[in-house]
Length: 287
Image (cartoon, rainbow, N blue to C red; front, side, top):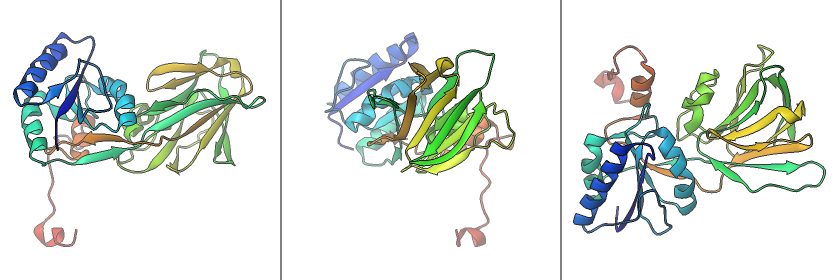
């Protein structure tokens, strides 16, 4: 990777991350690589290094994907599904990038907007890496959400809410709500109801080419739209939420040392110890 100009995005409430960001900027400059201000993203950047946790990467993902800047996530937070590189691996990883030894993963982003069913007025689109959540404001009653795939009616969910997740977001709120794990590089959208009234209301996996439309049937005044953890809209009675794959994916530098399933085994504690179980050589030759 030809690195001439690199951005550094740090977790804002972490003095350790800020110190590491300043140290990293000095190291990059000694290698002849220019750096921008902390937590700034510019279209001309060749790489954006994120120091923090998954939340920090979510905040950086929108601008990085808009500009087509690859992200290198360095784990300095709590969970670390998205920030795959450890601090100890950081400089070795950058050296490998400079030598051309790297792999970029293309993660689909979501684009959400609200359109009024009477006037046709539409909001500015907002992008998400993990999920778009339609959720009730109060704890009293269920909400009823009509749902369409393109123009075809799917069903009406009676639930506390509905998650529209990307494959990357399948390990986030979607997983907590009983949704499926989907490989991060898969091209699909996941619909997962939150605490549905009917046990027959199950998650649905759709093509990433699908335009999902959701309309709160009742009571609309109690419905909010949360995008990657931030409240963006409260929906009126005649509003429709449109969610689809965004035009540009997010490019993430994958760890040379950890596969997707190794990360899952480690974070979710599958099978006890997160060790590899290799296939026998006579079987591997066919795989």
